Image 1 (spheres, rainbow over the protein chains, first blue to last red):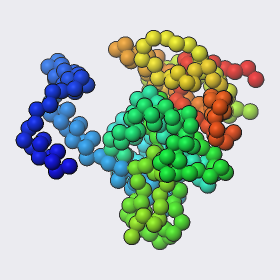
Image 2: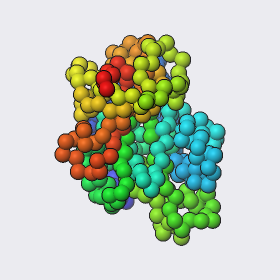
Image 3: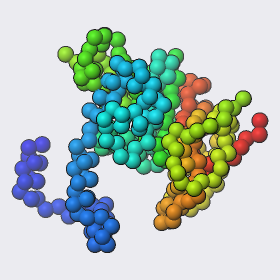
Length: 206
Length: 112
């Protein structure tokens, strides 16, 4: 890592890849035509970089401690997040709840649709063709590879984000977390739990 | 009996075509292969499922991709399919499902 960092600092020359070149070309054209400004592009990049799964985790922790909030979140995820004080532009959120009978997992088979406003940028595996094709075809095998062995008694629902909705899994609050503060609860809600390829563990926190 | 899809989860004010399907109604995804930018996955075309919810009316993605307005908007539904009907060799439970967002113009009623 440090080796790599040092090289970057020294400005090692690497030719642009095809997609990097496409991105630069498109961005420069949009700026040239006055459709966006450089400042707007930078501000959007900064906004996206500042977003991470901790926001989604706070939403989940609130839903665990506040039954009314949970009901509103399941009814209209976007409105509930806004009432919670979150800035979630352009997000139409569908929250799907895990129960002892049902487990949910999220995918976008067509590209990489993801609730970025709540989870930040998606992990590379979420965008891989392997995950996207296999999690709809053999979801239980894929979950097992993530270390999540779903009991036979549990129904599995795969959600393919193909259009205008974005999805967040509301995991089950694990046993052994009674009396925990909301912040401590949020600390065990990982990104993968909210995609549905993992479940929160109470032993994961001190 | 299907319930009526009285109101969308996310209302929009786009001029739209009328809503045809109710929550709980059985529908089939049209098995057609037009060119262009399509938001209906190949794997689900030709399969039938049940309307899980009515999301709202949204501009047509095939039209938006051609730099047109996408209006009138089409109702967007979440449709629930049984995995065993989508993949005949599916190994999980018989009631495992996959849910996909499908626009109304891709759906046809299934006579029951």
